[in-house]
Length: 415
Image 1 (cartoon, rainbow, N blue to C red):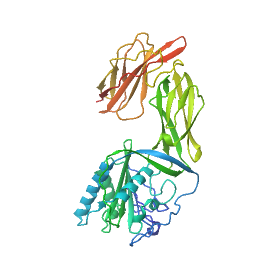
Image 2 (tube, rainbow, N blue to C red; image 1 turned 45 degrees about the vertical axis):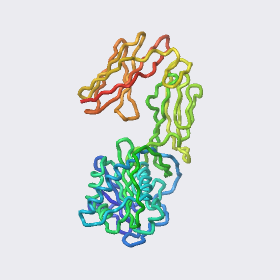
Image 3 (cartoon, rainbow, N blue to C red; image 1 turned 135 degrees about the horizontal axis):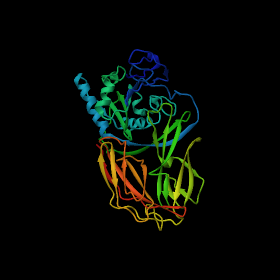
Image 4 (tube, rainbow, N blue to C red; image 1 turned 90 degrees about the vertical axis):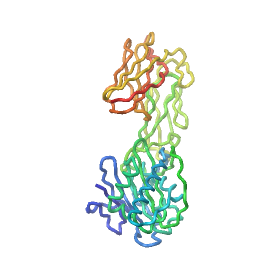
């Protein structure tokens, strides 16, 4: 089922003919599996020179937080969608539309905003049309959104089979388009903007990471904080603090750029945290790090990190002075939903920690084994998936635990 948003003046009827509650021109989208779509047009829909509002507030007011969200801009998918779109128009005898420089940039911004609040109301509570570039506000325009579709053909199929999205795509007035596509992990967010204004052509840019500043109404939002790759470190190790933000109308959690948060921690001698969210372990002990959102001091999240080892530091990744040797010869072999990890035994080891993750993922999971065993079977993994593994030595003596640096990373694919 696909549900579309239409201007309040047109009623707000969903694609299956049922009337849904309209909030500032938005109808909440029903989600089918991983994909969902919504659509909007200006309140004065239908005539040339239709201009939406004047920045009217489409949601309740409240405290405004400010963060930067991390996404991967997918220009390749955006231009794939353009080719698909023009093929659909050609089949109907319509002129092609051209990717417009300004609409492309602003559509990329809207796609990034939709990772925080998914729908036609922007995260700051204002209507979607307040993001339209000034040059295009003098002519007809419209917005289509989608989320959860990994390819351009799937997103376009969803829009073209929706009674409220298709009219924007096949409208004869459209001359310019901006298609914003961003990914957060494996989830892809899509934005289409159409305009009757003459386009300023733009060439595809390379895909790559980007950050987008977002102001948002904080009511109902939660923040989650993790230390990656692990929340147990040896002296000299570093961890990256990763924050994720989710609100009542988020499709999934948005990834917040670490440098856009404020940090406080309760044990200066155990660890230090840089402004860009990198935690460095200094001495054995426990430390709790709290991150807060600028402009919203009550929106916080904390993570506890344990540092194991002596108080003599060493360069990041090298382990503390006197630390045990890292395991060598690490190999992984894939099986049915499992991996078998083997390594050479380290003299004096009490046990080992095995870290594993899907290749390309940020977070590692861990499993432990006691010496003298020097292998571990990891079960209940995803089938036909490439995993990465690494191992480190644990030595416990006289009530003190020391960790080696991590071994080199090995990999294998499950069946």
